Image (tube, rainbow, N blue to C red):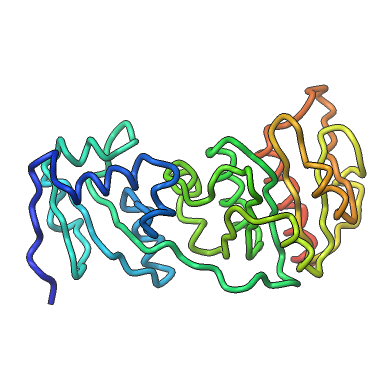
Length: 254
């Protein structure tokens, strides 16, 4: 049986202030140990992976038929819900869930390593590709956009919940992998389409401007690049990652 929903109509409410931090601040998830999921797609993606909400939050105008059962529910005045949202059209529903804690790094698992990427949209898109193409864990090194920030969570569209996610890791964590590291470059190394790619492996994608750091690159077994006959200097890192990860998926499929 679910408890009656609490209704909030005051902008000074402490619960609302905590929710606003989760929804808008890139570091609040670390302090609170919780993340904010906005919209039906993200909420259902979490449920599909067995993640139960700590709190369900709805705008007053959200129809009862769209509301999901939960032990604890808040209903916000529509204007207050909109003040939480970073979407152009607020979704009128959201979950607060505990930050999923990964187990130990799996040494032989297909892995994606993110080395100091700064754009949250790029990071989220790469997580989506990782989950789609059979990679099981993502290691975000220190200096990377935080993997559980609100913008990354939105951009990943639920991919987090199919992955083991390691945030703010030291490069030394990579020494625990027993799969070859494939470092990516915009201008040097073997061409992806001409190389017999190892499987499983760990792809490393670096900073949008500076690429993979020397400290990480020295650990790589192969240095890879993508043929660009059109003559552009480089691909967007999220597009490049999708190409590389798909190439690995083709190998794994035989």
